[in-house]
Amino acid sequence: MDLIRVTALLLCFGVTGVVSDASDHRYKQGDPVPLYANKVGPFHNPSETYRYFDLPFCVPEHVTEKKEALGEVLNGDRLVEAPYKLDFRVDRDSEPLCKKKLTKEDVAKFRSAVTKDYYFQMYYDDLPIWGFIGKVDKERKDLSEYKYYLYRHIHFDILYNSDHVIEISVHTDPNSLADLTEDKDIEASFFYSVKWKETTTPFEKRMNKYSQTSSLPHHLEIHWFSIINSCVTVLLLTGFLATILMRVLKNDFVKYAHDEESAEDQEETGWKYIHGDVFRFPKNKSLLAACLGSGTQLFALTVFIFILALVGVFYPYNRGALFTALVVVYALTSGIAGYTASSFYCQLEGTNWVRNVLLTGFLFCGPLFLTFCFLNTVAIVYSATAALPFGTIVVIVLIWTLVTSPLLVLGGIAGKNGKTEFQAPCRTTKYPREIPLLPWYRRTIPQMAMAGFLPFSAIYIELYYIFASVWGHRIYIIYSILFIVFIILLIVTAFITVALTYFQLASEDHEWWWRSYLCGGSTGLFVYGYCFYYYFARSDMSGFMQTSFFFGYMACICYGFFLMLGMVGFRAALLFVRHIYRSIKCE
Image (cartoon, rainbow, N blue to C red; front, top):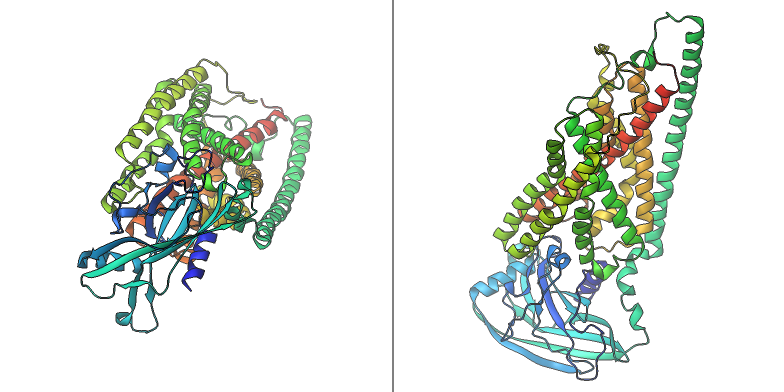
């Protein structure tokens, strides 16, 4: 039973990237192979992990910590040399590890860990190892009669090919247990065994088994069903809307052209009626420009991350690289945010471009920084590995100060000096027209709900796999399918925003600027709503730390989604509005 649990744990776990000291991975018989103990934690709470020796395991004489890259630290990896000696092609049978007296406090700590299904994670020559630290005997139904046991004997089965380590697995001896049921001091002897076997699997393919689970036929069928379902839904709905919209627009153009020829003084109706107000600059234009700048930067960040993923940078055991790429690419794309925001703000005849650039810089980073401060404090209180060391925080602050901020300002200066004027096909009247009283379903909140539902319906199946990877132990490597879903999301967001903008203008409501942005970004709110469904219905996460990490960081991610898709919706609406008003004569 325990072997099945460990196997299931191994198959479903995501793998983080760690680089061993032996860079060429070649060994001779008897050579020491680096083995690092990483962390322990509750299986169902992936963010709640602790240092390996936070539990009273056998501690070596000298605990040597491994230096880690930025991405590994951000991922919560804290590697130390493990006490086991797994020399290359050296078998060991019931090798004593240590004899340890466990105090009442140690027993209580281990029992609490076993109750929460604690697992341990190690790395052997860059290959990940997982296993549970103990088990609960639940043969008796009464909770007070449960038995708690700690595994004392670990078996390492290692496969090799020539001078390379190919695979390692771990299982425990079900007959070698330490009873943790009662609060009393106990003496426990710990052992380990090592068995080497030869295999024909080449070194280049040794990591394939970690990515096979996400590319199994039934998983791929679900992914492709999701894609086909999304495509059919999108084609039907967008085709339907496009047909109606093009037919209505064509009739409008014919009608307005006929009106101009037959009766110049005839009163105008519909979207042509508000041609003198449709390009009136919106309220809070500095905030709108900052939203567009931040959204454009996040869009560029997403595209670059997809490019890196599609060329194979984020292979399964190199997950730490994703965090490094996010930090570096975000810093390097800040110039895009500054340029876009400042350029658009100056087009809208804004004067305080410095304040606009500062607002752009803090619009996304500000909430993210506040969320990080709170969650990092929670992690420090819990003594979890998710708490970033002071040195790492200093590095991130230096990157933001020396790279992000200067590029943001340079982009803002370039945007200000662009001297481009806002291209409006129609002149704006001096006084705005009064907007007629509209029914409730044409107001902002109902329109946002309508706009966000369609894009969300196109991606919700794929969302489960992404959540299970980020907030669980699955591996997600099918980036090509995810990229197709992303393209579908952009198309649907743009189209639904254009359609709702047309209906808004047709009802003689000329305040479309913010409405188009809010409608485009509303999918982010639907994704955050899905977070609640996933947390309570599809996961077994629990505890204050895991809950705060999940909802805190997902709030930041969904906020970023809101900014990015809002930018996409607004840009599509702006192109559409310019096109239709360029196609008619505007006095």
